[in-house]
Image (cartoon, rainbow, N blue to C red):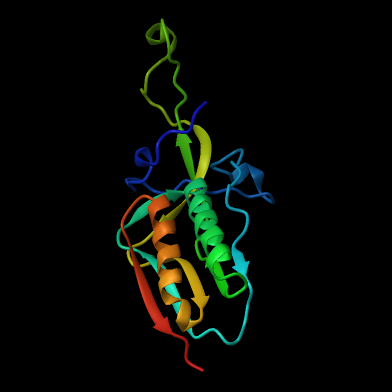
Length: 175
C-alpha cells in the first residue's frame, strides 16, 4: 500500500503511542514496531579546526516521518560532499520514536460494502516519526567560516524536504 502524504500525520492532536519493550512484551502498546528509514546519524569528518556551527531549528510543534528526515539528510549530505568534501560534520539530532497508526482502507469498486469505514478505528502501526517542539534543532552542521554560504544552502535544501517551517541559526565555535 502506498504511503499517505505527510500532511495527514504532521499535526499533533493526541498523545504519542510509542511504548515498545523487548524485555516486557506484555506491557507493549505496540506489538510490532515499524522500522525507521533513518539509519545514519553522523556524516562528514570530525576536525577540531571547525569554527562555525549551524543548526536547522523547527519554528512550530510538528511531527515528521522518518523517511522525510532521511530524505533531508541525504540531500544535505550529497550537496556538502560535492561542494566541500571532507570539510564538514553533519549530525542528525532527532530520533523517530513516535509510532504512526493508519487504518487500511479498501479502494475500488464495491469498497463501500467491504470496508467498515473509520468507525472505532485505531489502525495498525505503519511508520515512525519524530515529534519536534518549537525551537528544537533537527540538524547540526559544523564547518569552516569560509564555507558559510554553502552550509546555509545545504540546510535550506534539507528544510525543503521536511514539512513545517524551519530557521537556520549560526553561531561561532569558541575555542
